[in-house]
Image (cartoon, rainbow, N blue to C red; front, side, top):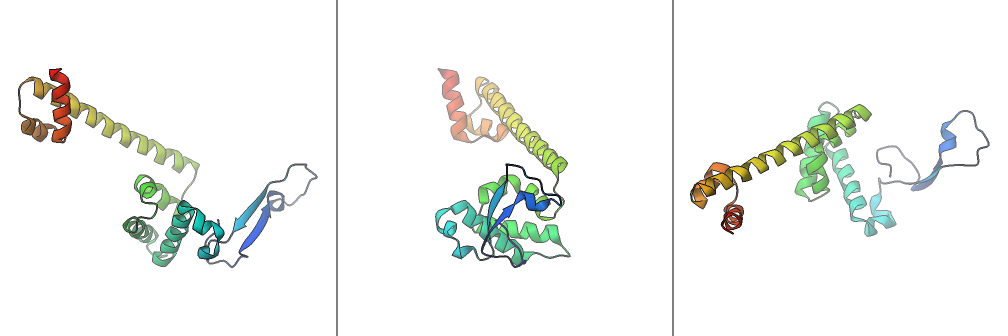
Length: 170
């Protein structure tokens, strides 16, 4: 899918070989069918694919809110609007930083790796914190503290503490 202000046909085919100055007579040719997403409501896929429909709507929001003077701020705003509308919300929750970097044209392979490492580190920290909270809750339960006291200490929900208490007692 291609989006943007450039006028292109509704449908077209692009060949990889057209990107090279010298043509050879290779037997293998990559042909990509391109559909213009700027008028996405006329695309058959619009009615059949929720993700592409949401993507097209997201790009529309980005184009409406984009400011050349404040690109990151305007893209963050587009992400907020999209989340409020329920558009790509799960993806944008996980990958908003990556989306901002890509749309600001500062995205490259090293950035991709760095973002993925940061996401993995953050996920590991959260998992570690949850594991520690469960361990602390188990110790507190064994010491005879009430469910409310354990919840206050660990920030775990009371139903989780009750599950832990039941497992310990059995």
